[in-house]
Picture 1 (cartoon, rainbow, N blue to C red):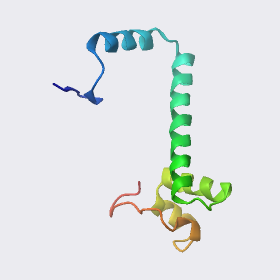
Picture 2: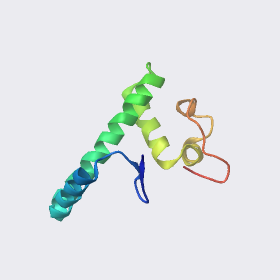
Picture 3: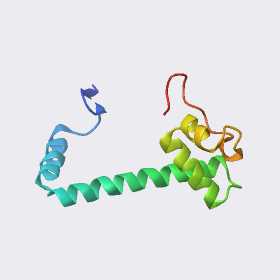
Picture 4: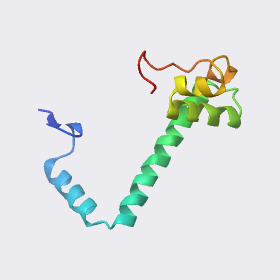
Length: 101
């Protein structure tokens, strides 16, 4: 049976291992926790870049960086900054109406 955590959602980690993970995370100092979060953010960015490379294989590094930023701040917001007809916005899904993410 799947367990549901109010924060994490479905949890597939054995309760004993989860307790060990939490114990370890609680033992870290602030700098170690920041390094862990920074590493997770960097990994997420690399995954996003890899996904965009798959979608736009002919794109330059500059274009891919633009697209990463557009996804981060919201395609609609980026369109307001650079113009909705900017060619690098093509193929990026705009946010739902009433949203900017």
